Image: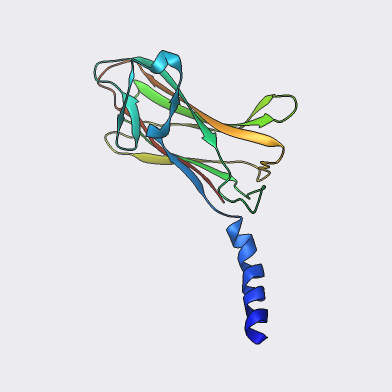
Length: 162
C-alpha cells in the first residue's frame, strides 16, 4: 500500500513537469512556398540558399503539441538558431496563432537575425504562455532573404519551450 501511495505522489509531482515538453524542428523540415523551390537547398539540418542565388524564401513549420496529456503547454520562449554572415542577408521567423472558428491569424512572437560573421547564433523571443491546442492552431513562418550570393544565410533550428 505504501508503494502504491508513493507511486501516486510521484506521478502527481511529475505531471507539471510533463507539461513542459519542448517542441523543436530543424530548418530542413520546411514546407516551402512555391516561389522558393528554385532557390533552396538542404544541408543536414540547415535550410539555405543554393549557391549563386539571391532573393527571398518563405518556409512554414506546423507546430504540434508534444504531449497528448496537456492541450495547454506552458511554452513562452521561441528560439531560433541560424547563420547570418553579414548585412546582405537576413532571417525573420514569426510564431503565428490561428483562431479555430474565425481563421484569423495573430503574431505571437517574432525573431530577426543579426549579423554573426562566420558562426552561428541563437536568438529568443518571449511571449505569453497561453498556448491552447484545443481552440487554436500554431505555425512558424520563416523568411530568408539574400541580396548577394556570397552572403551566408541559413536557418538551422527553432524551438518552443518554457
